Structure formats: C-alpha cells, structure tokens
Image 1: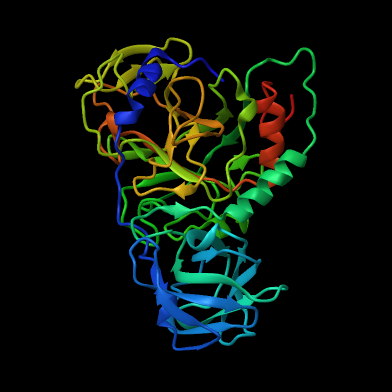
Image 2: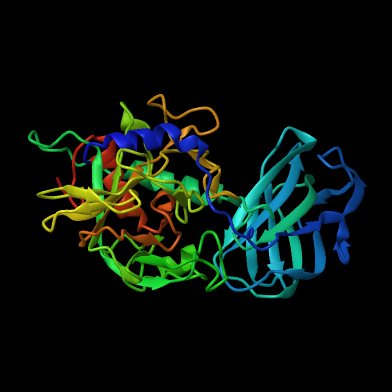
Length: 447
C-alpha cells in the first residue's frame, strides 16, 4: 500500500474524536416475553432473576411448546432473532416455527448448560427469508435427552438489529462457520521476490448515483445527500447482505467482491464529477498481521464525518491532494481545495478502522463497533484484527479558483461507507495469502 501522507497520519491520530452523521435507527426490534404466550404445553411461569426482573417460562422439556400470536416479523429481508435462555442440565434446541408446531422453521437456538437455571445468556440466529407482517410463532422444544433442559425469558425479532438503538448483532454460529472454513484454507507460499507488504485490492470504477445511504438511512430512498456508488450495481436504500450476495453485477474487480462502497458526490461548478477510479486497498498497519481475520458477511462501517465543516488549508487533516506530474500548482480562492496541474489528478485517501469488537456487524453511529489501532495491536473492547481498508479515490480534473463542493458540502466532510459482501473463500484466501503472510498481491489475489 502507498505510504500514508503526513495529513493522513494526522487523520488517524484524531480519528477517535471524529463523529459520523447518524440517521434513524433501524426499525425497532419486537420483543416477545416468553410468558406472554397465547397457548402452551408443558410450561410453568415463575419469577426471574434475569436483568430487568419480571417472569420467565421454566421446566421446559422435549416436545413442549409455546404459541405467540401477532408477532410482527416486518418486511422481507434479513431477520435477526434472539432468545434469552438459561440451563443447568441437558442439551437440545429451541426452534421457532411459523403457523404451527411443525410449520416452516424460522430459526433454531442451540441449548447447552449455562451454569444454572437462572444464569442467563442470549443466543442469536439469522433468517435470510421469512414470512412478512404479523405471524403466529411457535417456540418448540427439541432434545434427545429426558427431563427439563431450558428456561426462556424472551425472544427478539428485528430486521438485522439486535435492538432499537441500531446495534446489529452478528450471528455467532454463522461467523464461527466462516472462520472454520477460513482456517481450513491452504496458504499459498509467496515467492522469494514477493514485496513484503500486507496488501490486496479491489479495483473499482463508478457504478451509479443515488440520494440513498443503505447504512445510515436503510429503507429510506432519497433521504440522503447524493452518493457516488462503487461496486455492487444493485446498491440502494433497500440494500441488505442478501441482496448484495444475489450478484447483480459489480463495477469492481475481482467479480467475487460483491460489496457496495460509496462516497459523497463531488461537484465542480454545479456539475457532478465522478471518480475516474477507486482502488480499495485491504492491508494491515499492524507490526504482526498474523492474527488478522476476514470480515464477517454483512459487515459495515463508515470512515470520516459528513457533518465536519471546517476549513482545509494546505497541510490540514482531511485534505484532497494532487497526484501525478506537476502536482499541486495552487489553491482555490477559499484555500480549501488544491488546483492541480493538467497532468495530475485530484485524489483523496480515506482510511478505515482496523480493530473490531467481534460482536456487532454495525453500531448506532456506524463506528462504535470498530476502532483505529494506536499501539500496533488490537485489544480491550476491540480485540479482533480486521483488514485495514483504504480508499484511494482519483478524479480526472484539475480544479480552479472556484474550487469544488461535496454533496456533504465542505472538503472536510469527505467520508466513505463499506457494506461488505465478498464471496467467503475469495476474501479468506486473500487475507491468508496476502495480509497474514505479508505479501503484496494484485487485484486477482496473486503475487
């Protein structure tokens, strides 16, 4: 990866203080208390010691069931589900089915001892498709052993959010399966003459423009300022992990990267100037990148601050610069934009966080689940090392005294979004061969 200019080093030094424009939280998650059943078989209601108090349903064994009427499963798309369980003995599963005790399976939560009948844990699952609107949902208990094996306190249903505050909880079972497949991949040894830099990339061109933001304003078309989208050609306000993976085509190479990337549209004299190319680098700034793992499917985050409206004189943080012969030959009348030689391009490099909490695919501000490393390691609340994404955005324009304007206004408001949907094996092989092995790879993932 290119050496970071001094202003980018300064950006990283202040990144922790940067805020991001936030929109409405994802649709509120529906919480169903276990004791609110309309009918049941084999259940007993008792006071709970779980956080918040109230009651839980206990003494549940194989074949028992609970019926809940009018559970709103929302619109089509990914459905995130949670079950609050406690167990002192036995094992099995809590199945959620629609319509009847033998109806279509919505989700299955594995049960194993948690340490006691009032020692509570939350199990998560994700349904890629589901009936929409209000449904009758059955909780059906399955176990191959005899006797009681689980207590239930509540269930939650949401469109990818673990709660109404906007935290998107990852499906740990799916993530563990992705990790296992990644670890089973072979390492292709780098040749002796390989450049020892942790790096691979996606080479992207402009795809389309929309006043949409699938992360900040999900399912709200037209709610955002104008964005220039790169990568997945289907990206819009209704984008989900599943819609990206459906493969509507991409403006990035390799074709196995079905992710969506977007930035605010740049304007010159009122006319949109689209990027002539964007290289999305995946690398590592860690002295030891061997613990780096791929992103989980559906991971999303934002770098930069759409609300930051401050002057950007030459040498300041969040600055556009000129790359190519002749470089910068002047500044705009307000001092905030460079004027480039006719042989140079206007360029911006945007660096994303590289440490993750290991729990959430997204957070309310789309940054709180990730952090920049300042010590060369990932730890504490952000223990998982993820590839360090960096956008290098080029515009084939020189600029003038009139300068430019972003859809988010001043140059300081430059920001970028990623909604990741690589094919698992393609991403995993690149992380293993290029990032972990510290070898510079090309767009095809080769050395």
